[in-house]
Image 1 (cartoon, one colour):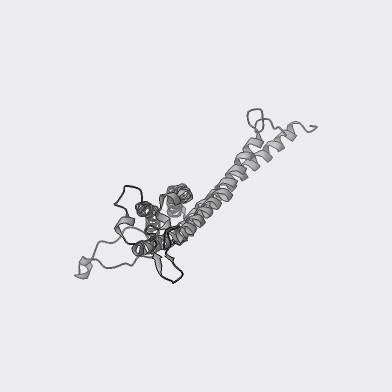
Image 2 (cartoon, helix red, strand yellow):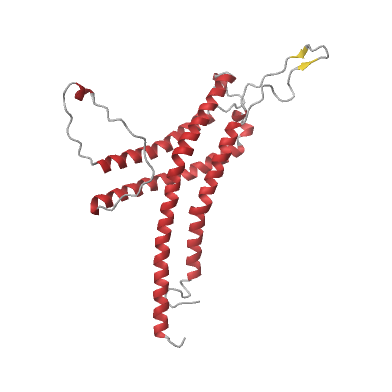
Length: 260
């Protein structure tokens, strides 16, 4: 069906609909799935147990149960052998890509704050920052009162939330720095794997896994979902406008050509 103006040789409604379908698939189906898969792969990678001895170099005993070869210990953990991080690094890059929603989320939250302050439009922000204890300053402890805070509760909440969102991104960067700083490369004797014993690196790996599950699984996933939900809301609004324009053009076309 071709509609003059809206659906002419220059504007094809099928092409417009394809854009909406592509946007829906990208933000609502594909990207959350890619992020979820990346998280599962990283968690699985971090959970791999490293054998005590190097492959084919386990201890050997004779028929008298005497040790004839003590074996060679595997000092470097599986996770920090460069040969084992190909798929892991691909998953890390997927999380890097997903983190790009953070600035847009911060902008959306500030936009909601401005609308709230302007006309009282309720803010809809399902994510939250950790509660901060309001501790008295040194001056307050000695009886000197600070100047009244000019920021409203809404301002403070939003600024705290945005600060927390960016903290997640910063901590992810630190996590990567520590992880890749532990890779045991040939000729490099300054890695965490060189500095610490195997037991120390196992403790190090445990902390990395705990950190990942807290900051990425617990903290970042809701923020990414919030971004996807906002994309869906915007897409629905644009789709509604398109449908209204299409219906209006159909109505006008029938009026101009009632026999068509």
